[in-house]
Image (cartoon, rainbow, N blue to C red; front, side, top):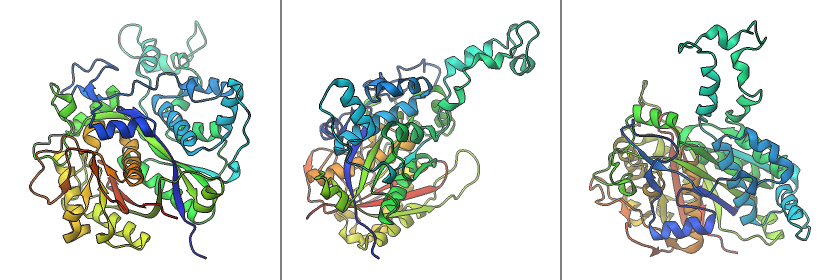
Length: 458
């Protein structure tokens, strides 16, 4: 039996430059940057004090029914981003999930019938290291330091006067805010997705791997619809510390909009950010039966690992071996050749070593065809969104195919002459795109993935 065909019917980007498919695409075409001085906390003590923050997602209760409002109290920022992305994705796809129906009922709108079988509605979501609520944690820790020095015995042992430990100043459900699988947990509960569910935690490769797994789930007949992608917030002190120690951040604090410079010869690092996206993948006949709009067809997936160093910070493979391997696997899975690809949407995060590794991997995979394929590197405007990075790139690729248009790769000039990449830094640009491929890799783990998309035609 041949594998079932899988199409993309809904897009839910959540980014510093726009939330929802249309605002995001408009911002990309206009070449906007969402990198600014950090406002969420005092970053004055850091070498890099810039990042991408999402101001549009402030009230999570806009994206969940009233019956789920209690769950909002145990949502870390990463979970909020995923729940918002899910709402944008299902509404963009025209899916009448439990969440959509309940919210319509609350507004007094005409009740609509569900058009998705919950038992065959799956979820695969990429997640990162969720930062604890530092103010909440610090407040509790302070109770175990009455003299200014933290006392572990006060923290963990019941006290004679109260019978309680200082640890109990944290809510009993505190830990549930910070488990990586909670993104998928909340999304599946709100939308009543009862099909196969999984969480991928492989750094910046997480979204691509999650989308690839959802693709396989539908192709083998286990589900008809999957919500997939990833989200993460790196707009917090812990993420900024980790990226700073890894020497991955640009220090262009006086020019944040131009700080992250993918593939540019003067690139000096990425920028922390928050965001990501979820998308709706759907079996072709299921999508056609309900009259769904189709952005593109997902036709190939490849993954690899090229961990080549031990220690911190880890280094990418100098020749981009893992990226090249993942691309070749995706092409083989799609039953196409390198010269069929019209568009490449790389991760291109802006660090010197990782951009060099990825560019060499592209050269190895595409060979003499590389200059003929357009390269659309969008992360100069959105930065490093951790587990959500790949989802944003995937959504951009789907929109480019749907609109047969390329967004400019901002901040990519002067283009590094070391590689023969066909990058347009001004735009938008009309471009016939039949096949596209998008790549992702984990900055610190060696995981790589590639996804091949095809323009949809009857």
